[in-house]
Image (cartoon, rainbow, N blue to C red; front, side, top):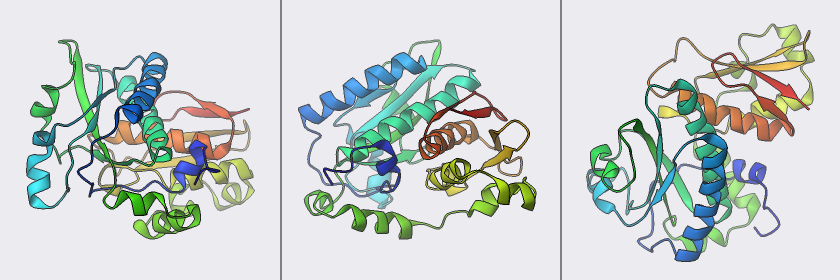
Length: 260
């Protein structure tokens, strides 16, 4: 997989990994991740942290079989009562997730499958901050065989891993005429967003293209709005941006993407 080193490549092979080998994340890999986290935190104004070797955080999920050998996590920490920060938590943490995928590590976003109070004991959370969510991270089960797979094999695993909404479903607020006339970069962005993780795999983000301004818009489906919708919005925006090639999003529900 050496020739596939871009985040867009990671989108094509990332899946939610629930079973891990007990091998520790090596110091070199931890340093790589920490360098990525430092850059991302500076951009986002967040305090996303890598926490290693804390299996007690996942004791219940590991014992039930929902997870296997989960022990490490990314703790997404940011200011309290800040919707934009929660969205950025999704956007920028998913960027770290995709980088970790390229390093050969497995990841899985978690909301209820961990002991949040226990997790908070092992990371830095000030009185003005909240621990939003976490991402399990580690070596996928049988990881030597996993990393030896060809890129095409990994993309096929991703393609069949879970059902995904179609282009039409993710753009259902658009007219048929506008949907058909949308530029290729918009279609590519939606295709990448279709591969994004979301809470309970609900894929609650809708995309539209405005032919008058040439911009894209991302909005939370009001029928699927919920506790983690802002996090899902950030994740989906990142995937769309990488798929579209170049451009920038505004923050917030209903914000525009300006293609460059």
